[in-house]
View 1 (cartoon, rainbow, N blue to C red):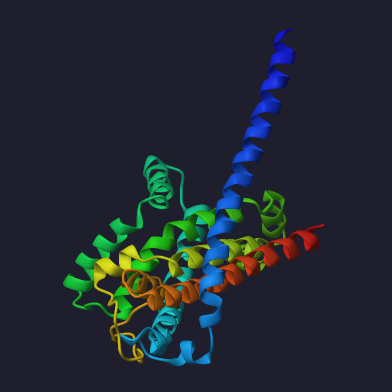
View 2 (cartoon, helix red, strand yellow):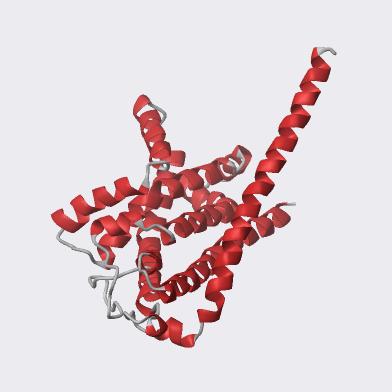
Length: 284
């Protein structure tokens, strides 16, 4: 048996090993999802969505949790999206190549992989203590904005890089300025990829728990937040609170809340996939 035959055997073995691991992971995920859906789907109704938290499982609802999640989602999007896209445009289109730019690029890329608890500690010190925002929605959204900013910046820069250089050159040849070229040609051409990256980053923010717990988000909030300075809770924290309770009824409530949160995240990821597919069809 020569080396070529050995390499082919190794390639096939690795292929089957990878496929086996993939299906095993899907099987385990399916078992978990089946258990969650089996326990929680019967609990999902209008009362569950509109009731306030309660110490009695059958009367407990997720009104404060899902409204707090929407508050956090909206505020984080308002703060992170414009800043992240603007930073990416500057770094990619206007920033000069230097050792400082290379160092900054490496740090931004590394920040995308920093554990979320670190951002929680940073948010606790800056937003909660120094700025005096306490455990408010503003402090939580600022913290999550820091968390997803590197992801948005990296995704936007990659989208801008994918635009052909000939597009920019042709625009300059017709007398357009740099900003006119970016605004009228580069951004529209890369918009689908930018939106996909932004949606995936926001989906990550929606499921985060550790940073919000660190800054002081509450597990029990008996009122609906009405202003960005109000205290809040979110669905992951509410789920964690219910799972830690000994009563079986709270376990069922947690399963129902997990289904709702998963549905929200799946819808967001589905929108991202749809935008990507639609953009590819247009490009062809």
